[in-house]
Each structure stands twice: as structure tokens, then as C-alpha cells.
Length: 398
Image (cartoon, rainbow, N blue to C red; front, side, top):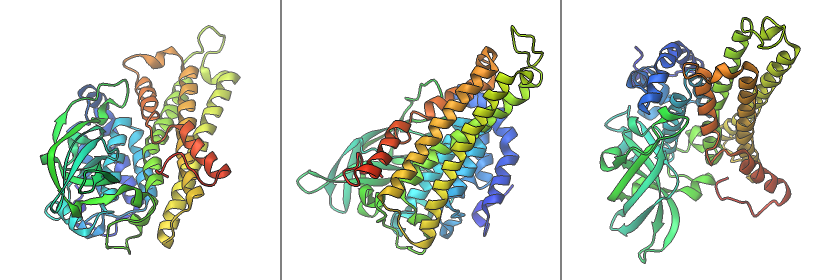
């Protein structure tokens, strides 16, 4: 077993190799995780032992501080075993990355006593706050908090108010999980094992050092004093959008792998073809699906490589570049979900049997693809606005 808190200079390829070694276990636990509506604890423990939750954590606390591309590669690999587990891996790593944007004092609160602490989160400010001496008192409910079963802290959106109670900013607050209530609300058709339940705050005090401005973070102005750590200079909203699109890549790859393998022995019903693989029409469908998946990968990794390059160079992508990255994330969703639909049509009705994993991948992909951050049509509108209007974006979250 690896001891990730004491490792040094771990490379992306090493983490990815460890993940691939765990895929049989993650796949074996996938059905049980779906039934329990949370990732099986054995899987979480194995992933933690492999250092998967260290990817986006600062090295100062024993993390690996790897480029954003590593987050995508790892999440996509995990998704080949189970989409829900990959979603949890994605969100916990993204929230660790967000924690790296806070002042060092806040990071010490999270990781000082426990370098293995995990963080879940919801950016939406679905709450209320009161300004008090030294910080804010926050009350609210945050849906849907993926990975909430497995987190020790949460980074949560809230309205920052002035002394008169007027909202003046959209804040992100770090709050210990022990100070938050919990309600099971995640009863859905897909991504069941993501455990995306509700966290609840009742008049919780949040000190000022554990608050940053979300709009400033979206524009590259963050709270960390460690400006030499290039990972935390990465463009905020593209990091989140591409990260939550990443599980789609692995699910698409796995569905293609299964359908290709079955086609060698599965007959094409009501035809003279002894196997699906003999049919020119089936071959066309397989090729089209494979090309759609290739397109998704090309867009995802072009975008994340540009983000990593800009962060390493100490530059911040302009509006057009960030809008294109958002569009790339939506394009991933559009192409992967289309490819999976095509593959399920080609494979046939057997793919929807309860015992067939294809239907689980289909459901997980369909639900994950509806996340508001990566809806293809909205993402493309952002990019079109940047191309045509220049200013007047449809969202500040660019």
C-alpha cells in the first residue's frame, strides 16, 4: 500500500498506473455502490491508498500538485469501471484544488492536522448570511453535494453581505463537515453512487480567512499567498467544466470496448449475418461512434493543455479562450452521449437488461451530461457570444 502523504515527486503516469491496477476492484464494487447510492468504502479506501485524492492538493501538505490534465486522465480511467466513482473522484479533487486557492491559514485549518482530509463542495450560493465580528454566520442548504459521504470539509457558495445585510459578493466558504447537517436527497436514474446529497448549515460561523470571492476567483484573483504554485493559477471555470466532463471520456471508451468485443460473437438478429461484426452497417456505426469519442478526447485535452500551459507561464486566458474551453467541455458531452446512444442502438435491446453494465453506463452518462455546468447548448452559446459579441457574456462564470 502506498503512503501518499510521505511521497515525493509522484508523476501523472504513476498515479494513472495505480488507478488502472484498481479498475477490477472498482468494477466489482460498482453495482453495490449504485444500490447503496454511495461509492463503496472499500473503493474509496483503495483510491485514497493509491494517492488519487492527492492529485490537486498542494505539495506543502503532502499532495502531488499535478497539472489539471492529470485530473482528467485519472477521472476518465476510473470511469471505465464506474461513472459514479469517477464523478466522486472528480469532485473531491476539484474541491481540493479550490481549497488551494484560499489563504494559507484556511488551508492549514483543512490540512494542518489531517493532510488526508477530503473536501466536497457546491459553488451555488443557496444560503443566507449575516456579517458578524471576524466573519459571517451562514445558514443554508446545498444540493447536490457529490462525494458528501466521503468528505471532511466542504467548500460552499454563500452571499457575502455588508453590515446592512445587503449582498455585495458571491463568496466561497470552507466549513468543517462536522458543523454541517446532512440529508439524503439523491434518488435519481443515473450516477446513483455519486452520493450527491444535501449539506445543511444552521447559523454556522465562518471566519473571514476561510472566505474568498467567487467572481474574483473566476478572473484569476485568489487568496493564496503561494503565487509560485502554478496549479492554482489555472482558470477556474474551465477547470471545473472540463473536470466534470472527464468521466464521460472513460464511460464512452468502456461502452465502445464492450460493444466491439460482443460484436465478434453476437448475431445480428433477423438477418443472415452470423455476427454483428460481419455487417457493413454495424461497422459503419462502430466507426462513427469511435470518431465521436476521438473528437471528444481531442477537444478535452486540447483545452486542458492550454489551461496548464497558461498557468505554468503565469498568464491568464482571456474571455475568448475561457469561453472556448467551456465550449470544449460541452462538446465532450455532446459527442460522448451521442456515441453511447449510437453504440447502444447498434448493440441491441440486450444492452438494457438489468444485469448488463451497458445500461448503467448509458444512464450515468445521460445524467452527468445534464449538469448545468456542461450543458452543450449553453456552453456553445457562451462561445458564440465571445466570437460575435465580444462583451456582454451570458454568465460571469467564464
